[in-house]
Image (cartoon, rainbow, N blue to C red; front, side, top):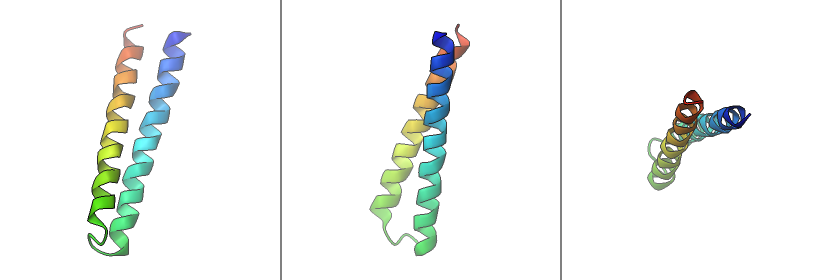
Length: 63
């Protein structure tokens, strides 16, 4: 049961990371590097979210 919870938490973090990458791509399309700070912040948060999601998938594989 604990593995299932970790798996679904990992899925949520992966989807959140993908959403953040998509939002930074949309921001880039508005104008090339128009709002650089917002794009970098979104990319950083997306990488952190993907990392946490992969960590939960790794923890799931241990069960």
